[in-house]
Picture 1 (cartoon, helix red, strand yellow):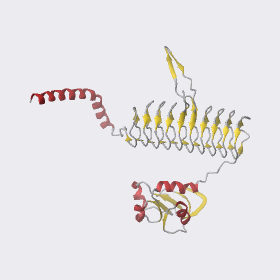
Picture 2 (cartoon, one colour):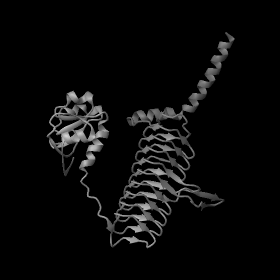
Picture 3 (cartoon, helix red, strand yellow):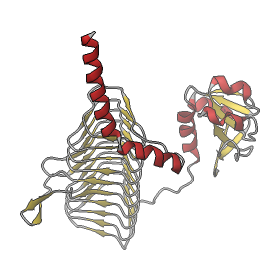
Picture 4 (spheres, helix red, strand yellow):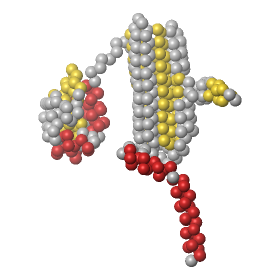
Length: 349
């Protein structure tokens, strides 16, 4: 439940975001909250039908919801075609986190050859390497490191302890959360009879405008050529993007999802948590992968949904199923023999 010093009337919110107001337009809103926890000066939302049972008990100052739910709402409401999207826009008004003050902290290390734009904030213990370029209005939080020749477009926000590797190119308005590593070496090794030898990772990472990279996510530099995220890609925490992967524009990947080397992901794809691709696979535009899906071959038809998750079940039931799974090959062979015998009997008739 979040409140701020910002106050907005429902009539103001209705006009600003083109939402139909039903109720008291003079009601003042100072923050956001869940349906069950929001108070009379907060706005909530209903996007998932499973929460309808909580709507009738809400004490929120207003609820953002669809037309079909408006008659059930006991308080003021703002009607939206997409309540979650409308909520996101309204909630942004109440983000009380202070903006960083422009300037370079005395404890930061900035190369004399780096080119720093206007109104840039660089925090304590940050390191900006040789020939780096930092666009106007960027925020670089404490402990973040940009290696030599890396580049940020205007309006980027790098949170604490982000690592940007040599020569990485990042577009405008990119957000990178704490602990992310962009441009580390990809996993390139060659076996030489009795030991491993490192394969040089000579490419870089190129990230398009308006992307967001979650905490502790890793995006490896290319081995030959570059690893690329096109514009408006959204990666959750703890994702892994291997060397020479391409992620198409407007694709979103949830926590612990990822792609092995040289995979190519289309535009507008959605990966649920822990979904992952094998190396060198290609995924068509607007593909959706369910949670924990493991894709081992390319998907060529756009707009399809895939899943391979086996949901949790009581352990005794799982043990029974597993014992049968171990005999699946034997069973398939027996069925094949029976089919051949049945086919011969049919022919004899």
